[in-house]
Length: 111
Image (cartoon, rainbow, N blue to C red; front, side, top):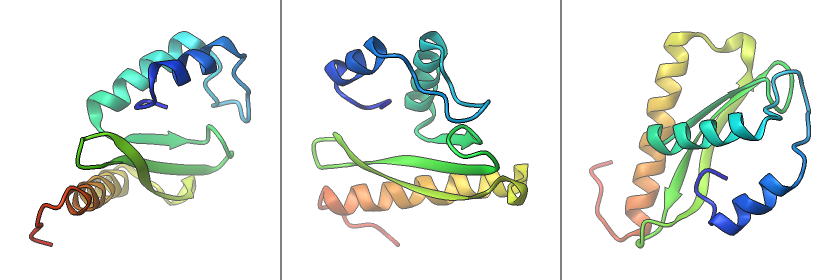
């Protein structure tokens, strides 16, 4: 959603936001701030917002026009996530997204 066209974002914001867990973002203002943060960071860490006790870390995959066409993520039980592992997973996910994006764009990568 952070990289979706404005018309898609508008449709989401017109509807009420469903709550799946106590951590689910249901405020449109909070959602907009989160989407801005995701675009700034280039990844997103979700913890318990869709499934209680689960986390995911995702990063966008871009085509040769730099359009976001997919994402890659890692997910697991939140009890297995600590700050050191989170930092490691963020690095692995963003590096994988970059490598895939580079291959889609026709760039050669070192890995």
